Image 1 (cartoon, each protein chain N blue to C red):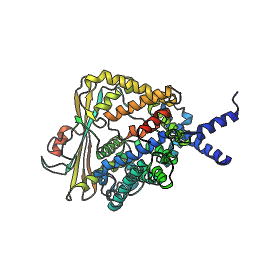
Image 2: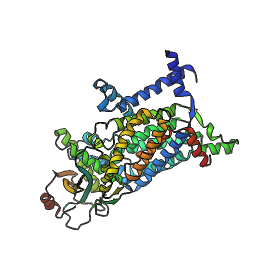
Image 3: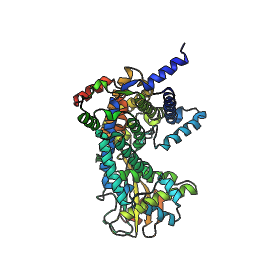
Image 4: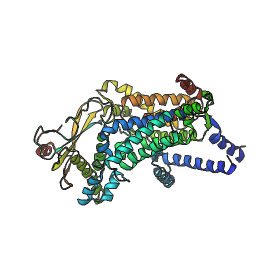
Length: 310
Length: 205
């Protein structure tokens, strides 16, 4: 018979027991790099996307009000919440975002630079023009917040190197990179919640059941990186559709089962790598990869970091 | 960490995890009585601009698959062969390598797709639809190097047949927008080729 005390003790261990933080360190590097690269490649379109004369600029909105459309309806339609920045402010915010996301990736003043990047990205994607994204930022905002709340900046970071230089001492061995488990648990639970929405919501979808979906994804120019005649590959794409159809729902609970979870984590990493190679859906795959690494045995990531010189 | 702090932390963490679980519970597997809990969880997540997850690639088994979209924008009344304001370079390419999808293409597609869903709605939905189209028209007005009187927008859809590989074109929308008056003009959903040719002067596809 399980007593309430046993349950409380299990929950306490689940949340607060020291756990390896390697996946969170990977998350810091990946999320910082994603923000940096995302906004570097958007820089030529920044004025059109976020600026005063852009798709949701205030002058456009004022003209709409004058023409009788009604500003609230326009704001609702564009899912806007905040006004557009002036060109100077946009340039400043943009430069600050790029600098802070890069600092976050390399672990310099990790929490400060990370929260600044998180905030400016929030302003641009959520409050200015959410229509210009594929939905990944709302997911990554959560994952990145967990990394920011963790001790991911204590290891394999510029901060750690500067501290050692200032105070002396040796870098801790990779196997000793540990911290209370709760940020890692939040990342893991959020990832499984995402797979439940993504994987379980399509169980009765006719396109998935018929095996058409991957063909549709790689055929359509709005999704595909390579629009060619995919017809000769239809049987292969059908198999891939059914594989994904089974894999993502299985992840919801399967990732928590030892051995099965490792297999699923690597299979999903391979799936996301394939998705990244073949499709244009923003930074979805990179946003979920650190979460999947949270289910990989710590020794695998320790090996990776040792090879990287940690 | 003191006992009460740890207890409070546990409650907060478990509450957040519950929000994630309820927020991500898909509608097809969710008992109806949990809908209010799901809605509350989603609203809570939105406060932090966070999503628990969203379905990607929801497709059906219909034989005609979406294949591509082309958006053409030009100055109102520009003659045949006049340079387009959009797409950059003047041509819409579907086949081939697309290393990245320009975010402007993504945003304009989402705006047009949202407007299309609202086209048969009531007064409020149609006003919102006008909001999308006018905001888009105005933005293209402001992208022109010199002031222009207005812009004309054409959106073409392409489909591919799953079994035969045949490609089909369908005209999505034609609309114009007066830049100087900031006013949305004529809006025609699914115009016939003849109507499009009459207004545009040449086939934009």
